[in-house]
Length: 140
Image (tube, rainbow, N blue to C red):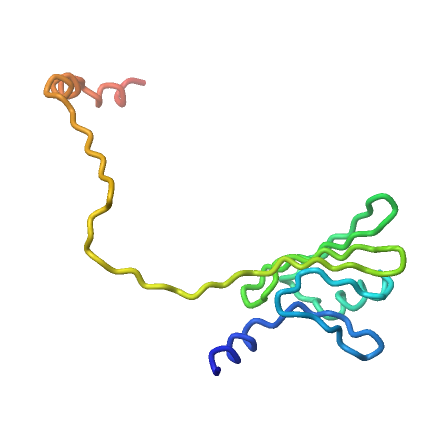
C-alpha cells in the first residue's frame, strides 16, 4: 500500500483544468479528455501551469481548428506529450503517458537454446594469413 502511494506521489498525473472549480471525473487509464471549455482558456491554463524549461509548446492550425502540442523532457513526469485540439464548442486533450516498469533481476547459468558455430577451413586460414593487410595502410 505504501509503494502504491509512493508511486502516485512521485509521478503526478497530467494536469487538467477544473470546470467551474470542480475537477473532471476521470479514470486512471484514461488518455483522452473532452473539456466543455474554449481553446483559449485551456491554452492559458497550460501556459501558466506548465511554464518550465523542460516543457515546449507548439501551436498549429489544421482546417481552421487550432492544435497545441505540449511536450516535456522532464524525467519525473508521467506523460511525454499532450495534444490539445480545438472543437466546435469543446476542447479535446490526448495525452501520451510514460510507461514505467519495475526492474527485474535475471540470473542463471544456462546455455542458450540455439547456438551457431561457424567453422573455417584450413585453406581459408592460409589465404587470409598470406595477405599483408598493413601495406594498404602505408600507401599514400
